[in-house]
Length: 250
Image (cartoon, rainbow, N blue to C red):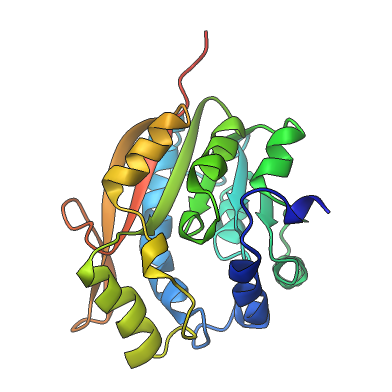
């Protein structure tokens, strides 16, 4: 089956399939994503609006844009993108995530095209998007370069890819693995593997080799005192996000 080919890491997929039913529980295994989602959405919407000259104060400002949420999980990003007017395809290599996402979208009155497939299979089929959301996926694939090559192929000329992941350093081990999995028990042990984390410099290099032009990067910073996430221009030490564009081929 197509969804088992190329960069998919079967062991990584199995981890997320085991947690599929909890996607929409803000106190469940995906609590960190629910907590981070407001700052993720702020960055995503700001970047898309700037790139495509859209006014976020208008209803459905992303109308006319075709957007791919690769590694969509239960739809935590797909749904707000659909509400903002984008035509959304949500794709995931973990098969059990798809019915969870479909049921929640239906309950929310949203029309989202959810698919059990991979970036590579969609690229091979010639799919094209204005925006690719590639959030917290690249650290889970078997071959980051091949995966990002496929994501780049999915973008139309002048298209925008937003890609977030986790830095690789002692602090990220302490926060993202020991802190989140052992101390806080936000995630099951083994959800992340530190050696698969990617530094911002490495990610920019991979993105550039995929034929895209990096244009921005920011950090997501968790404050344990206020118990809130914020966006930082300077602190990319643990979670961070990048924006890159596909050159116009004219």
